Image (cartoon, rainbow, N blue to C red; front, top):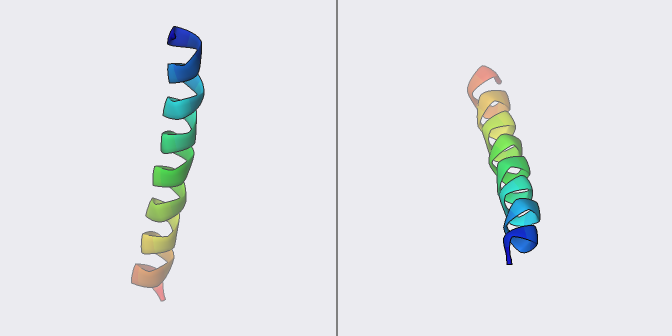
Length: 29
């Protein structure tokens, strides 16, 4: 189902972005 792949990619992108932001915060601190 292609409709199910879009939300998955969006969720993964959001999770990765969140992790990157946390890493940047820890590095800057």
